[in-house]
Picture (cartoon, rainbow, N blue to C red):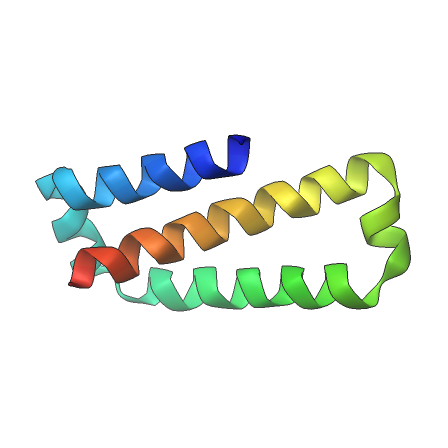
Length: 80
């Protein structure tokens, strides 16, 4: 539920806040940074069993993954 709230917040911010739209359009490198972070977190969580099974580490990786994925969704939905 918390992941959905974070994702919805990012998408709403990028859709309805005009200065945020302009800032993201000027800094396109942020999309690629978020993409790489999301992809690395996904690979690490999929391949390393200790990362996804130990208590603080799995929450940290899940939080980083959620923020990167939410940012990517906001940027992609803003482009339409």
